[in-house]
Image (tube, rainbow, N blue to C red; front, side, top):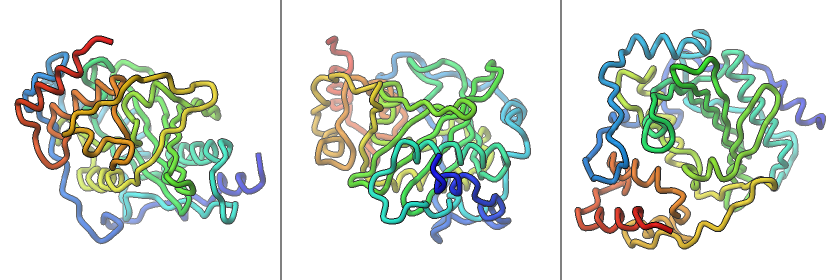
Length: 306
């Protein structure tokens, strides 16, 4: 490991801890996230997962198995400041540097220095991903060259917690998003499996119920930070190149934003799961609902066989 990266990984924990007061970090107070409610579009392949019998107490108990001292922390800023990058005038992070950031934020979480939001997320409970509640701890970090996210996740039946990270390299134009799974000290970069739901970077937080969120103001602040992310590109590692995804979704009410020159990248059939879920739960389009005629057009496109 380079000397500069060793300094990055050994930054003092005390300098990164949150304080006792709460704010969004930019003077604004984001609106709390409304629980996810299906609009009954007919796009979902399966009925909405029923979590009505799942209690707040069960959520707290299962979430705390990650280590109660690591969660429900007091905070000043929802995004923890990372030390300056050791290389001056950097243009393009190396994979080794990206790995270093991912291992650093895992260490910060394991040592209780992170400020995570705990929740039961929507996206991972639907359709073809997994039909069980997913318990999440999400923390955000940044410095001048990178936005870094950590997701610590499990189902109720999993024995241990899985660690996943996203690094947005802000030194390139547009920024480049790296996705990886972390197992101990090993970082495994992911391509097609993450691109399926994350073609345009990190997803906003979508809790199933308000009582299945440990800190509603923190969830809103982190979600706003995610929503403010720049238009970025997805990094496919050398061993996991992108396949031919065919023709992109060209329906005008989607391609207005999701286009080569749009606010977000084009959508393909591989993105059918997040399209169905995000439209059905009213998150997309972001400022209006699709008309019944537009829903029918979208459903016809999603249901087309290759």
